[in-house]
Length: 292
Image (cartoon, rainbow, N blue to C red; front, side, top):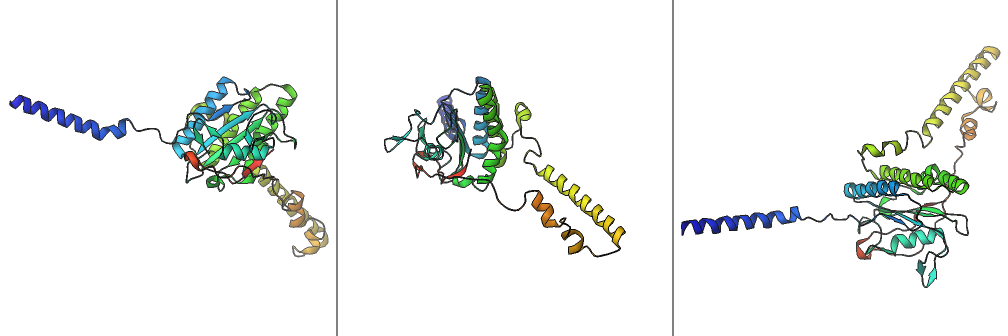
């Protein structure tokens, strides 16, 4: 009787432990999408597709942000329709895919309430306006990746790759550019990648051009100082005023103007299509991002 009591006590304790540990042992990977790369154009080779999938899954696991790659062969014939009409405009299509298209049972890219999704759309052929790519941003990440930043990322990687591809028809250049693009996006989102395999693809320091600009400014300042000292030696001591540098066309306005600092930013044409996109646990985009 005593042994039976101890056995029942042991079974009860074991069952209690299993019940307590069940949520930990069988905890679902919340927020991890079944798939992040939808290569409908079949342009990404298997090596890069695996690297991109792994990288995007890690971004989701660490930051909860969802970055999705979606490629199509052409803006005509892809079959994605709104109001029974195929969407053949790049910006409208990107926004509609982001908000309304169900991907593996999930509608909307990004977590509901956080709107922390990113869509990278790429077409092998250009639309009627000459565009073939777009980064569509969720509202919650527009502070991390502004329209100008999204455009700069495209200009750094996918735009040159598109030129190479159109000249050589080698899809590998696009595969690598898509990987480098998502790595750049991950860095802006705040993903801290420790995987050695991605180091060779990581954007190098200074690719944004700031180091070059700073060096040019330093060089021009040195030239301006030398010019000023030479004028002082020739004409006598005068203040660093209007007739010295400004009147000679070497004023700060002229220097910065010559570097293209006279204002202006990246172009952005923001077609808005689709709408909500909150159903099904997904995030939404209000049309932020950039296209090329």
